[in-house]
Image (cartoon, rainbow over all chains, first blue to last red; front, side):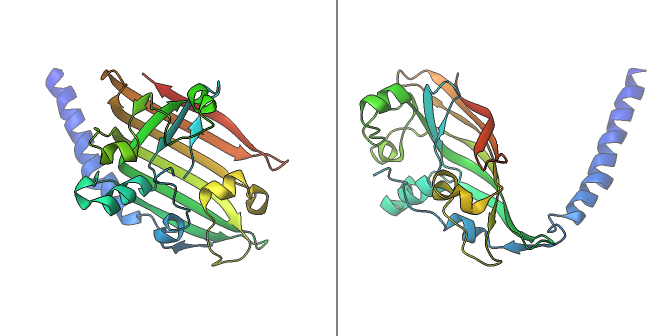
Length: 54
Length: 181
């Protein structure tokens, strides 16, 4: 029974790796409807430097 | 950069979710780089009513983090630079050779802007001073930083801050944790 359980786990892992994750990867971080991507730098550069806390 | 306090107003903490402190260290000396990486995305969404919402998701690795006592800060006129830390070290201390406390940080924020393509506001100024111009807004920051206490004891700084604006336009936090263990 133990080997059956291991086998089930292996199959589940294989399914996740082989089917689910590729589908997620394929879907990717596509923008939501009505949304467009802006450069990350638009947010990261919109700051007033307090890194030195001075 | 946003700083955080706990619900009881005992601990204050900063975590370098935007890589600002790392930029500062690299500007002083590239060899001081902490290897902080910032990834994520910024979406601009236009609703049918014309509202323009900015949705930010950041995932930061090796972010510098430190904490200070709010009581000590108050007694020191909130001189952040010259008030000692109770966990980790400040960027200036790293310049002096201190061992940094590092860890991952994840930030999600939403807020509105007036028109598509408008400049994105400074997040600190927006949340603390100009929130009324960017409603509705939400923020969710979570970080776990591994470092040491001033006596050298290993410790972990956990920050969890989750908030959203209410109908009155006030930012109400449902989670306010700045915990050192």
